[in-house]
Image (cartoon, rainbow, N blue to C red; front, top):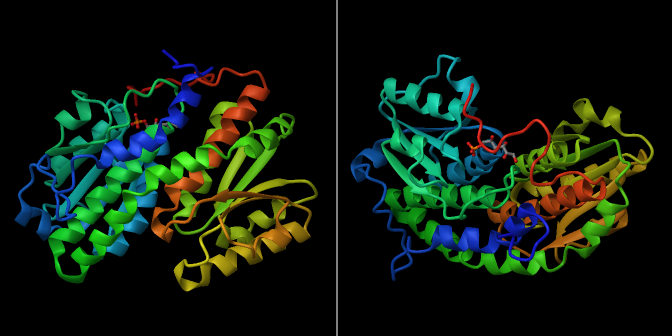
Length: 369
Ligand code: F6R
């Protein structure tokens, strides 16, 4: 049932091109527009929403954080991301014009379920992004947008994460389409690019040998830091989470801009740091800012493991290792940049002789508060 792979996680990482492609499948018409019949919320009602709150936990919450950047950019609707267990108890500001989007692979996470129920009590419209048909959270929501990642067995979420990001993009682009005008035009272009991403993930998966090698040499490492910016920031946190749960190594993800506000004090000789570099075409000169960060930490002795787009030569002088990802427009990069970090955690866990599919102390679905 592992399809020739040693672990479910390895198999599921390899299935990611399909997870993305299948989540897009059947949701576009011949004119290249999104058709989401499954969203049984009235179009006018959807057009009238003036705020989105995403509720989720763990990896699903990082998918939500990626989505925030994308949906706000495409729709200009304010998006807030709340950890479901915090949302319930923070007296959230939610009304009938708020769309509450829950994200859950299992559809059974108690914290997320209770957040959805709470949102409904407050009068919000609720959409569930979920991977499991017939599970509880979709049943408790007004509508559901299924991710089509297929069953995820390994405790650590990988292909569901990519499918969750994809489904969030689909939702954001659909809302942009409903807004019409240039919003709709731009959405169409992004959607067309999105259809090309699965092939890029496939190519990327074929070039992970060096990442595996790096991981195997790091079995004794005690701490790894991850830096990212904009959509790369939640990816840094996801990379850190994967390493914690699979390899039991202390790991932390930071927004690269925070470095000088504290975390740079952690950098000393040999400290491994992954840096998720925004593509050179990212607005506001973010690429250059992150390259400067790499330079700064390297000067303090960090071992810099740089995830950068193909053709980005600016990183080379400051990188101990460069891991290449194919080009996409900036907001779609997370679907690629997270892959080496997943493979790294998997390989390091394996190198330490740990059970990759069933890390200690964790359960696949957390049905208690
Ligand atoms: C991390 C991981 C967890 C889940 C979280 C939410 O690899 O798997 O952080 O993402 O427990 O689970 P779901 O998506 O089932 O609600």
